[in-house]
Image 1 (cartoon, rainbow, N blue to C red):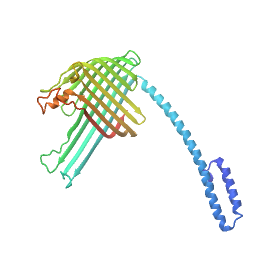
Image 2 (tube, rainbow, N blue to C red):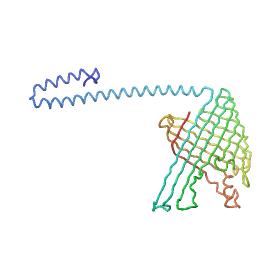
Image 3 (spheres, helix red, strand yellow):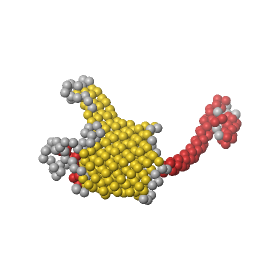
Image 4 (cartoon, one colour):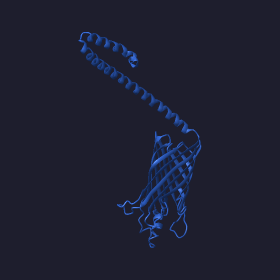
Length: 337
């Protein structure tokens, strides 16, 4: 029993039992066992308490050592990240649910099936060299929903696209200092599943890029042309203006964050300006798997006018409401480095 007790505690253990044994010899036989048992329990409790304190101290020492080693590992990783070459990463969030009802009479449609499915993908491929960089990124967000009333023959059981976002960008910069580069940017935004390139927005511009932190890239291009592609009779115009992009990508332990703000400011007025802000948060729970939350915001008055003309042929920029567009998704996240 005492083989598990530390050596420095053995002396006190034997002394304790010597006292217990001596005292027990002076007590009648029935009481000996009781006294001996009580003293034995009290003695073990005292020894256990001492051992627990020692283990807590040892645990703290090991935790401090782990923190030091983690700091050194992070420093080494920072040196690896600073080396020239390609950096590749992809993270995706998947969410969805399905449900079915049969003879559920408390519902308006007692025989029905409901489903929704969404996926968001963020990926980048960056080439970092001593004198230049080339950063490429894409974002895809697709969401589908269905509601099938089985008692209505005209009701479709097919999934319909509810969210459809696609963007692709490529930024090249030649470094004139450690944090500033002259740069050129190509950025394309459209839908992917429905009405691809109708409309489609293509930005081509030149200017400067500021990188105050390895995780932060700020693009300022005062010379940018915003090409707008559309089919049929639509209200879209291409204009010249300024482009500002801010991209932040960071990992904190198991937490991954990516935020991208893209703004086009037309020199012909706010009616032709637009912005898109996308955000992705994920937390890794096991290996590459975790939970994720994605959301995006956008304002585009040309899109708002084109949508309003479907119901009001007399709509103009002055009569429409340019409401904030948004999407969000929560689900399982997968991260690949």
